[in-house]
Length: 191
Image 1 (cartoon, helix red, strand yellow):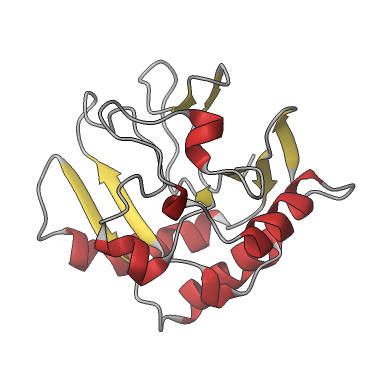
Image 2: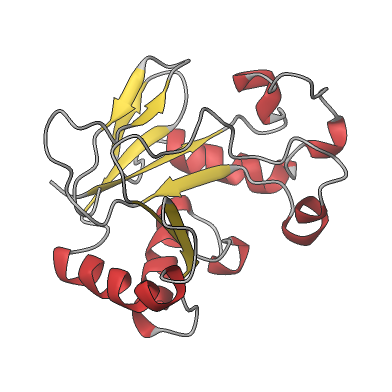
């Protein structure tokens, strides 16, 4: 099955109120998302016709089926491989070229699913792990430091969309964990 996962925070609430603050960082109201954007996204994800299957009742965590095909996933991996090849061997990252027609189509699909303009989306980014023990440590996906230059450049992140481009064999890990929700999402192509 192909799907994408997305989660968002309640409008008018800073993500830290819902999910907590990483150790050592204080909550700052300057980190709040713009209420009108957060409200529209929350309504779309919690409304009567959410963009996918609901994975959690309390917060809008959705699985979006058929976001990309296996062939499209292969193209994304191919166009990102050149950029990713020059980065660290353990965990490689690459921005996908925004001018590529497939990248533009996928950005529009994500924007449509979230009910926002594609102009509000960050660039699509590919992260690849090469070893079994590699991966992200527990973290949050919003800006937690009011002095972070990303906050002024991009604004506060109010939702995250994940797209898996490869299948992962059983019992090797690789899940995206939402520990405070007691939920894990297993990677598969297009999910």
